[in-house]
Image (cartoon, rainbow, N blue to C red; front, side, top):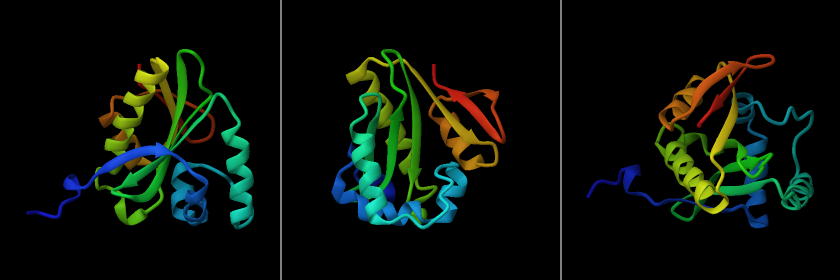
Length: 161
């Protein structure tokens, strides 16, 4: 039997405080954050910083914080933010760079979007992506997103509705 990634179990679950130690590692990886355009951190993120962030965002009613798992291993995040009755902004990153290009992003996107549409009845999903992040743009297009317009700086707005 082949040991290919397609036979591995990819699932999403709520982000837990026990994930934060690994999330600190992801957030301090400059390659990850350069591509996703997040953070703009001026200093190295600590576990204490992450705990404060986690407590703050978990109180928000317009946000859903999910963990991407490969088998039982936490490998990345999906966030739905600015959630309303009909729309939400989508965010994703795979923090384990050795797993980039293995299909985890597309499978977890499909799972999370289906979950959101089924459980929250949200039909309009949008995201912002750096113009230079070609692999992400291809991933989003594969999952049904289309470039809607160019935004500030070097970002595109993409929609899935």
